[in-house]
Image 1 (cartoon, rainbow, N blue to C red):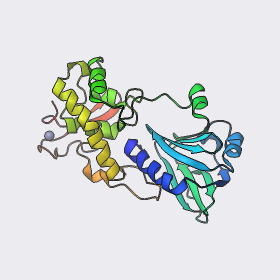
Image 2: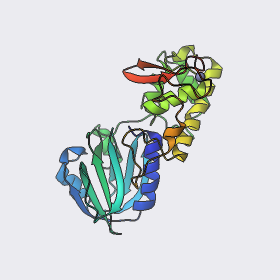
Image 3: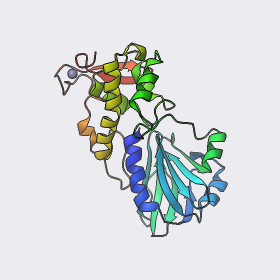
Image 4: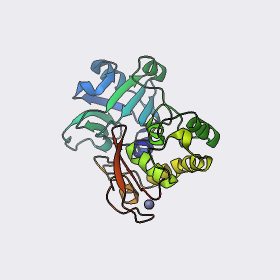
Length: 274
Ligand SMILES: [Zn+2]
């Protein structure tokens, strides 16, 4: 599932490819990927608008349009957004095609259809409940050591559950939660209020370190994720624990252990992560 680094990679490239472009034609072949408004209003509201800006919030991509609406894209599990020449035949599960002025097309495909598309003013999308309120952006200035460590002291939840909670910190999913815990040398199952000050600080530092590295590698293409140009990211080779249960810890050589936490597969090193 695409997480912050993958969504950030797509958003940055989309900024280059689509800002300033007018959407001249809209073809929506699978109406149920649109969660707001209805499919006809979605297509009509998108047609003829110009993309003015692209922003990422958590795992959402928000394209500001000159109509004052925003086109919001969430990739879900298998969603893929890409730009290609409009003459290329669409691949299976392509649900939306937006023709741009330069002759290219912005396409959205999603085999499992957990992704979603929204159109409207941001405040309205929040009001009707299709765009959730998100926690702090971990790569922004608002993500401060004091705020993060104080929040950890106040909760008894396991650290991994807090990292995954989009209302606490936006954008982190199963891959990077495991990687952040390993980077910090903290077992994912540890209860936050029991963490030492040094552990809380290491976790605070691990969050941007792990995310920035993954963005530099253009994301992790473990499953279906591809970037805006249909290329794989290279961060998979950098993963220390995710998907590596039973293999050696890259840091100490111990066998990595796999467990389940809150219904999510979780891998950690029994020796580096106490
Ligand atoms: Zn280890």
